Image (cartoon, rainbow, N blue to C red; front, side, top):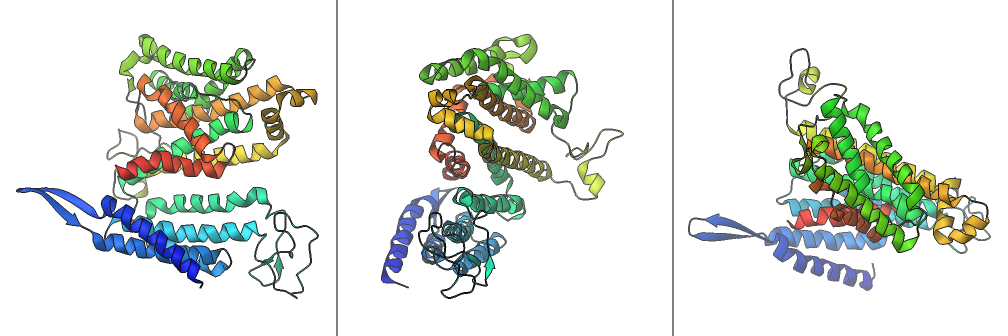
Length: 449
């Protein structure tokens, strides 16, 4: 262990110590004689110590997979361990999984765990991608070859995303999963789904859409109106809401996509505002600014998450013979948006590798060269615009089902700007960056709250 690593780890831990001291080291409480201050110096010092150890393992994980294994085991064990404060719990879990992610990233970046010199499997490569001179990778130095195609540079972020999805799947079972934390996580996943949908339009095709909240509103109002007036359930109306938003994008695409650059952006902004104003002023259909209340919640194959069920129906708790808990519905909604977000992410990633995705990227880089190759730019743009609208419609239907209430105030320009900011901050065309940006933009304000 070099002196430079110790120095870097010490500096990082001191930065965490001084930043966390005013945020997590002091707790105030109203008392009879005034404000009572509780100092939690021990928890902050323990967090700084965890960061010190984690930084050492972080740098070691770049060269040794065992450091990553230690981080993963430690992070997974910290999920179920009791901690004096939620801040210390979050730091312990975050440090452990960050070290594990670093090890996976480093291993994939250098083409896996390389064989030792002289190993029978150490076949020289003429020019391994992104590694210079080296050998074919071997698994855990045991001589099991790994395909270079599997470890291609384009798939490097997939390992990190896989770890994040795995953690998201077990998150409701952890001690950190309070009702408030699940609500925040559900909101973050909703914006991840929206940003992945907008990334198809902005990131892949290069179409600057700043009226994305319009499609979001169409999906929400579609489910609200169909459930109120026709009695269609959530699962039947979910694809209908997505198709309604996609069809609107398809119709809007023909006149709008003839424009370019700032003109296109201004027209999409106008579309988003038109949808909001229509929802505000068409009181006979949308109830105007008062909104639509009493929207049915999603059910689990017809089983409602309620304490008591109407005559002839069964609740989720009664069917599975478990005690009723209000958090059951919150957890169910969390898993719905998690599955939807993962499916959208897989769809977007797959589309990027298909000829359609290649055409989007070529159009984004140079529309004239794309048209000269015989690619129909109009249909390419309409496909990207409609698919992005489809994802927004699905997210809107889930939003209406989760809230049980929709109003025009939920679909202002701020929503479009927030989703666009997530796409830009995360890196246009980068799914992993969008997830991290969603956590930062949506989750960070709740953490500091």
